[in-house]
Length: 240
Image (cartoon, rainbow, N blue to C red; front, side):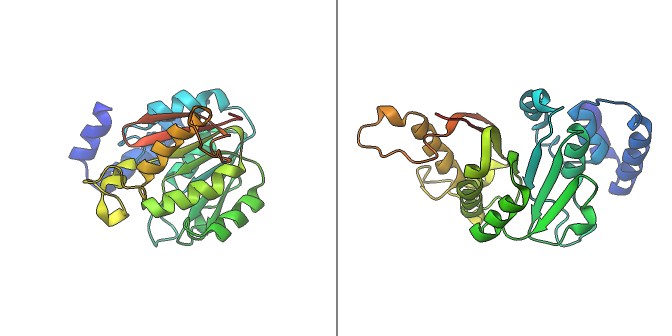
């Protein structure tokens, strides 16, 4: 991590890109590379946020399975040829998986043999339902999209029911739940319309059997655990 930070501080973006290309040439022949190595190899910002150790803890046991992985947010803004770093990282980390991406912009140039992107809004339930129908079984969902609370909640409520039992739903960059520009609130922490409030409600859902007069819904009955770390949460689906 120290080396990554040093490179970021001392090198220009062009120099870092050149170093990364050289690094990819060196490590490409090496099989079963760690997620940390792959994160640097493809340049995903997940390593700067400190997410990689958590991802490796939960995803490593699933690495050799034939999964369908969906990530919301491809990156690169409006440039079709930019972004896709995380998609390529997942493609190599999960050698038997199909990787899907959603973005508000056209990201078709990022498509590959085991990568397919869809263009649309994560705040559009009809679009999300269509994507779920195209994919079929969904094993892992990662929300690294707009970070707007309304969008996060819409995506979760629409896509979580399509996640297989035993699947994991991940929400990144939760600090935006405290940013008013993203629909967050840093004063009223009980504001019900934020992504953090939604996560807090899942904790109640875990204990729905012990809450008098609480009618349980499909989320109460299918969320097995919620693991929260700074800026990121993992929601595990199973019959509860």
